Length: 154
Length: 388
Figure: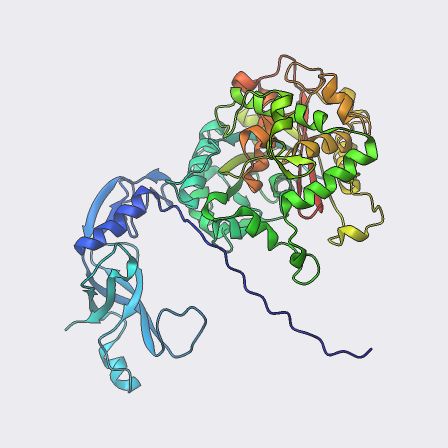
């Protein structure tokens, strides 16, 4: 019997209860107060965000909490113009890596508040080394998206 | 010619639902414990090998990368291994290969599994089957093992009472193990009265889902001799695999684990062991279900084929028996965080070193064997360790 190869449709649904640990939990709790807190490694002096309980470079626990700025510098950025299943928002939008003042680890987040119609105009407002500041949501739940986006300043 | 490889340290932690830790933090704990045990610094480690069976347990795909920072693996060659449950022993075998071939002198092997993160381990297990033939029938581990257990008991004329004795032994042994999740003082009747999950497998024949990690550090001969006067050597390794189409194998009787006999023969040939029942002093045998300890004791030659019932009846595998099996409590008593079943190897090491604490058996242990099993009756991995 000649057949046409069939496609079997499937859907995998697996609920999770991920353990955050107290260090990461505090990092996000502080977002409710618009505070970005990192942990400082006493050995190498790096400030880690999200706050982590140990420094992987030095292999020691990190218990010193320090506040870092919600302003920073764009390390790199990308304009997203394609769609995929589970995307956080409809394209186009900009994602960047922000080096917050006082932190030694970059923060991946959205860069917003910029008209996206004309690429040349975008590139003038959003650039590597450009300064940005967090725009916080009114209702904050202790989540990375309590920051709506980072807005170019100056 | 392969170089000799020694175990020079282990990293232990309690198996439990470790809900105040991330995967990374859980791994950091055992990596540090292993460095401390071996009197080494993170800079001494040349390479890291990870073992984790199924990413969907913790819900982070390619979870090996999550462990790099926590493992001493930064800026070093790392590699992840996964052969279902047998990851627990095939991962230290991969680490062994790294040292034996001369590539590295000190390898950190870390196995971990964080099973409490998902809402249903059996839902995860159901995704390891093919999409169209077996998965729609709803097979998962207790069901698959019920089928296998019945075939095994039938083939050799063994009983649920003998299975129950393994549960009493292992959960009782776990009372002496500070890292154990589920130590219990049981009776055979109490096990037999526990509810059937998939007859003939009962709740108390089954190892508990848990979270945990284990680390071992492997060293080349010259490094091991600098670290210790009397190293514990890896004397033999073996692995076997059988068809994923388990219902159509050459040996259609699921009661006999051909692939486990194969893995054991490789390891014993390499170790020069002719009569394991006489030459092995101690065994940590993979026991996710009680009958699997019995099957594995046979495949490992610790008793004659079909003789595992008599072995438990005669008390041979008790802690104070002539060939103690799972004095740590095994997976039944210590908990079964799949990949971190490498604990079986850790306990062989601790018994040989005389560092097994209240789990220490009252006899000299020079040579020990451990194994791990995984997949849909697919894999077995065996390791023989011992003194010169």
